[in-house]
Image 1 (cartoon, helix red, strand yellow):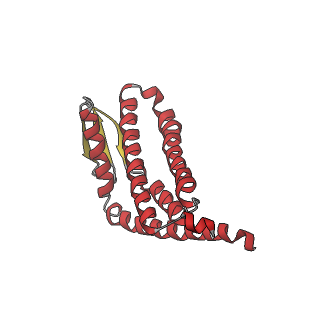
Image 2 (cartoon, one colour; image 1 turned 90 degrees about the vertical axis):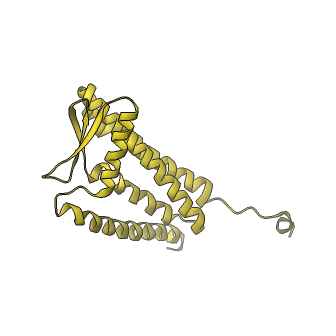
Image 3 (cartoon, helix red, strand yellow; image 1 turned 180 degrees about the horizontal axis):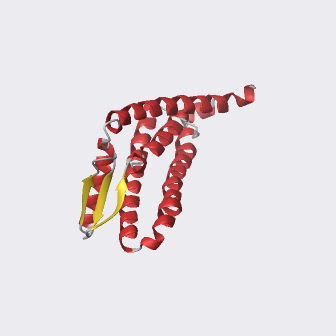
Amino acid sequence: MKDFKPILIFVLKFIVVWGILLILYNLYLDQYHSENKPDPYSGFIADCTVSSLNSLGIESRQLVDKTRPWIWIGVNEKWPSYINEGCNAISIMLIFVAFIVAFSTTWKQTILYILGGLIIIQIMNVARIVLLNYIFAYHHEYGKMAHDYLFPAILYGTIVLLWIIWVKYFALKKPIQNSDEQMA
């Protein structure tokens, strides 16, 4: 049992942190979804998506659905997709954070890595939604494959890569001893 203690501690920390974050996220969502309104963070993702598409020269706009907690994205007078809470990547961000905390080092290093990782995930997610809207608007026949397989693989692959970097270069890295300590 002693050999498994580090693994059990990791799993317990992961489940506790993820569970707390998930409960808080659902409380946040309930405030908006009970009134069929999209949450503000999903609105932010829609804003980023439309701004990115427009900056690429693709005429875009958004429209809040009045009956569901969705935000429709319009591309050149087509409405190829909508953004809901499942598109904002918060659910996978919670898993990312729980893993990093479960393998935490110093608070400063852990928090900085979490912030950097969340920024990378955010950028990847907005790029994913921008590309999906382009594909849905101009190459609809590839939309399902891109939405269901290609982009989830890229996004989850990015998170796994961030986890590997965290474990290899931060969490399991031994502190460097100065030369006086090495001599003793």
